[in-house]
Length: 367
Image 1 (tube, rainbow, N blue to C red):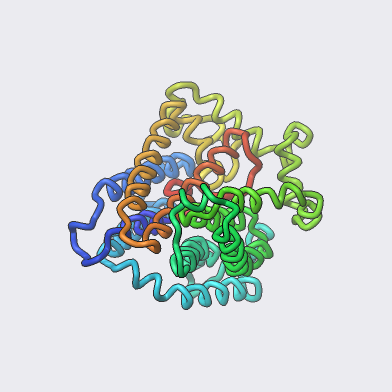
Image 2: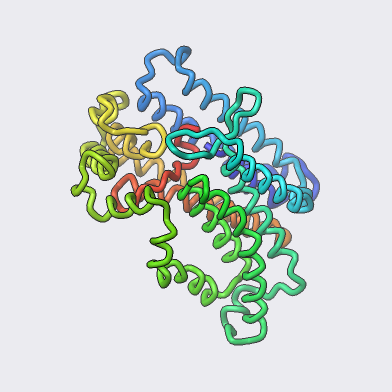
């Protein structure tokens, strides 16, 4: 659900914390998204009595805590967060190393730490910490040309300076990316990379550099393919041809497409989706929750969710525009890009346009 993303977007106006700086529309759309998610999770997990559903109770508690944290962060000077970025970075790396040493295995992946009976996933914290660290790093450059100035003169000395700056930025991001990849967790690895690109874009990095970096995996695909974990390669091949293994790797993609396609305009109704309720659609409350929306709430239900995301995007971009310094602008922009990337990829894999990566749907997926 990850409600810290909305809290980050409201940090942009913090000079003297007060209610005047609070964004009620952002709070409202966040609560609506959480409520939407709880409704769909209740249906996906076939809840008949809310009081007896640990999953729904846990998700409700997480949502409530997230809203409280969001409100609390609106009274915090975001610049204080930037000051402790190095401490957060070290904490993140230590936690990710501990996961590889002492982490709990679930479904063949070592991504969680059990602390005092509570299972936490440090890679989720890493998403936000990377955005904070990248925003702090780019904001700390001695000279900050406007994005239009840099892109209009890509062959100037400032372009070379941007190359050097981004090499250092990549060196900062790389340890977290490698540690998360080793868990293994392809989805979160991609989110961390996307977070870097989001902050870099709002920091005015020339398109030539961003495009060049984005093309590296494509140009070096044979090498990337060999480095990939076997399950990652299987997910790509099953995406290209799911019918070759309809009961194995291609099963989830096929069932998700059937679910979305069977919903029609208005859906079958909550609790009435045969794909969901008869368990043909697996992991429906996490990775494939949008397929549940497509089947039970139909095309209009999916459009309603996209409308809420559009409002969220509007308010977050407003935060970017109103930011009073570079760090606030990069922070709000990075968080915005991170959330939208996750939503885009999750919905894409649910409708068969992208491989399965395990990236959750922000605010909606369980966990």
